[in-house]
Length: 309
Length: 249
Image (cartoon, rainbow over all chains, first blue to last red):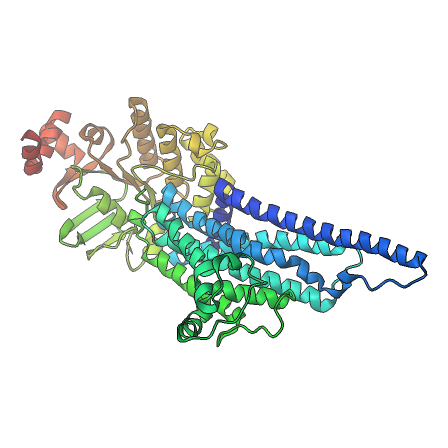
């Protein structure tokens, strides 16, 4: 029960944190823009196609099939995968960081730690808060996408596609929660509040831009548009080694691979070059981070928990 | 129940080679207002951190109302309230929201009623709906005190409670301590270096110097023997001679 109070308080405090609100708002704005662009582009194609059908009819001919229907509607979400990997991960990191840092920065942590609650209970409360906050954020994004699909003219999802949309959001949740936990772990272990945010940022940049260079030779700019740029690692001893060692740990690539497969974007014949599946990579990383978070709290000295800066 | 509220047997705390507390043995009985005097760096805050279970001692044993602070720390925590030297709460939340959260963690059931009664006791109902970030030092101190007593603990720890308060704030604090002690029967353990405050507030004192307890007695006995605040200061300087020499030189 006390764990729930810790969770509720962390959520309440994060709802009043301007940085967390701003970056989460930016993510939601991008989701809305993405939905509008998808709806607008499809509607335009439909308008043009209707005119083409009319013109063909006047000539007494049958128009070719609507090109929109030849593509998977889920492909319209290709931008979402990029937004989640970039701004979504950043939002998660800031949310996770703030939920833990606020107790240390405000000086409330000793007051919490002197209450009859186990340290592990505090850690679990924070982990739950991160999961709830990020799931809510992505839940809103999913609702917007569902509304877009319902509003799109002549485009409907079958049961398998609805299921894959749900799986895409589940994978996105796991990906963003991993960054939320990363932000929280460093907020609990660092002595400086600035460092607590700088280290996860560096790790995020490494996961997003540097590791894919060593596993699949994807240049940083290509990583910004990850779905189209998924390629196998070039041959050669260096890439064979880095690919084998780093791909199972390459969270960004695991997420991109899953997104591409679920949203019908994977290039023909594409396979994730790792001995463990991408979804397993996401689960393993989250598991490791949850354990790290509990240890970070167990090691946090409540009598000297205030940040140095 | 034993008469002893706070019991310390050979408590030591070392940070590497530095000994912050050296074999501290001390009992504080129920109903006392105990003034813990000492120079800066004497080890007063370390003692409070250990007794509030925030810090594990490197040696020795201590208990609060019979509950060991290491092996039975959850029960020990149920007995205590704690006001740190610089009271800091969530600035973006109102005083009421801060109190509600900390009261929930202490297992308070009738939250609204208990928080209202606590705020009334401290005469600060007007602060409930205001954001803590807008508070003055004195107002923070009151809400800090409110969070520490909202669950009606048996023992209240105050770390330099008068630090930074104006004379009015100090008088309010004295009155509140007296009421908590007499009406709610709380045992109070107060760290301070303000000798004048001790004679007005406490029923017994202990003097700590370089991590060692160098003197302890009831305030009655001290006043009978020395008479006034100035003499109390002489007592303090006499039991901590090296500090006196440092200050003279």
